[in-house]
Amino acid sequence: MTLSSLIYLSWAAVLVRRYNRKLKVYFSETSRYDLYWLRVLMISSAVIYTIIYLAFAIDLITPLAQFKWMHQTSFKIGAIYIVVLGFFGHRQGNLFSEKTIGIDLQEHGSVSEIKYSVTKKENDFILFLLKYMSENKPFLIPEITLSTLASELEVTPDYLSGIINNKLGTNLFDFINHYRIEEFKTRSMAPGNKKFTLLSIAYDCGFNSKATFNRVFKNVTGITPGEYAKR
Image 1: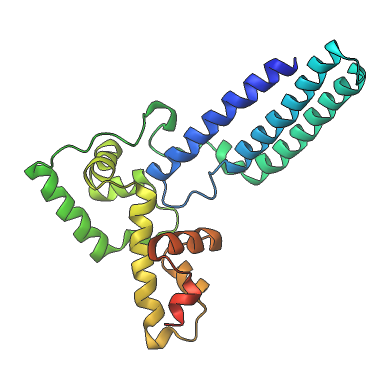
Image 2: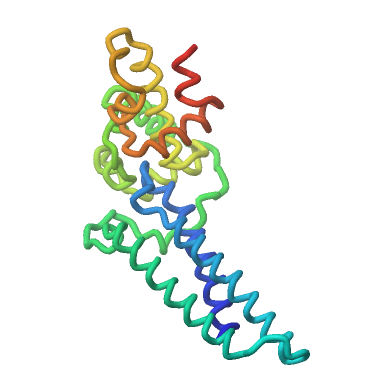
C-alpha cells in the first residue's frame, strides 16, 4: 500500500507541475488557479511515505520498529492529507465551477515549441496586437485570459497562443504582465499619483495579488517596487 501511494503521489506531483506551467499560457493572473500548494503537499507526503517504506524494509531484516506503528502512521498521514486537501480545495472553489475558459489545458502540449519564421500575415497581426495592447490596454482587466483577449482580437485562442508563444517567444502571463509593469512605472511617476500607495497603483494596472505584483516586478526590473519608487 505504501509503495503504491508513493508512486501515485509522485506521478500526481508531476501532473500538477505540468498544469501549473501551462497556466501561464492561458491566464494573466494565476493565483486563483495555481496548484503549487498541492504539489508541495504531494511531495512532502511522498517523502514521508518513503521514510515509512524504508523503515518497513529495514524492519524485515532487523526488527527495530513495530509494523503496527508504521501502519497507524500511514493512516494519520492520510487523514491529514484529506483535511489539508479539503481546506485548500474549498479556498479554490473556482476550480470546480462550470465557467468555461475556452480551452482545455489537458489537450494542449508543451508551450516550448520551435519558433518558426514570421510570415507577412503573422507580422501584420503582431503589429496589430502590439498596437491594440498599447491603445486599448486590455491588460488593465485583472483576470483577462487567452480566450477573452482572442475574442477581442477576433481570432481563435489557438492562433493567439501560437503567436505569443512561438513568434514572440513568451507566454500570456509574461506578455500581459510586461504591459502592467510598464503601466505601473508610468503611473507611479506621475505627480498626481504620489498620494496613492504603490499597491493601489498596481491594482489599477491590472494586478490583483500583491505577491504576484512583487514577484513579477522583481523578475522584470531586477529590483523591488519600493526600490524603484525611491529612485
